[in-house]
Length: 317
Figure 1 (tube, rainbow, N blue to C red):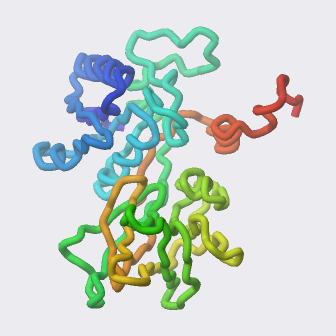
Figure 2: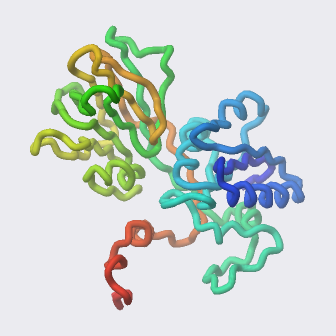
Figure 3: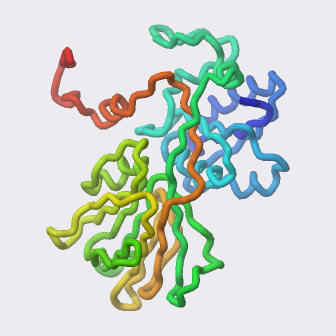
């Protein structure tokens, strides 16, 4: 990998991420790399400013934070083809991030007790192409405001994890009615707390919490999962990646529905509006450092599987 220009994005509000970001920036600059630093969070979106002021795209974006910080980076950088390297610094679950022990700067010794065999710094590993690029499927959503024409004033929305539809007025009953059409055929009308449309990456997020299936990220498919449906027959379904999905809010004009992308607000729909959701043509390019990453090991660790909540001793299997 060419490593001449790097964007370094740290999670806002995390002192650990800020400190680690400063150390990384100083180490890279000492090697002649042009580094642009920024913070990202719920109240801080650095990407419009970076894209407007920086004359060149970076060779790599390094993200220090948790999954939320990574999702924000993917939504902005995936359409530009910028690889993203993520480390869990100041984050929580970290499904999408590397262990921070892999972030070895120049001259640093391996952590005590580490089983890492590669004694090169992170930057040298990247320059020597000792990594893999993992392509993660993303979704896009466009809005039709009831006239059959996609709303040009409402931009295309992207999501790495999921889109979900929830009632938009807190002063009314927290339920809504959503009609789902797949490939031109009406499939169901969901009455309940909303609807999730997720990627395999997002299947371990909100969709899983709502009772949906877990999909390996190597599978390309779309999960459609109702949220607390008021019907025993409304179930999660998995559809092919090329499926074209349309979602309509139904009911009175006051029954607005909010569309969320990866947990961030996207737009508000009124009855008569339609959201068109499909696979995006721009996958997120995620840098993978480990030689033998195990998705199942990640699930076991993050979700406390294999009896880790109840067993004092691990099994011999």
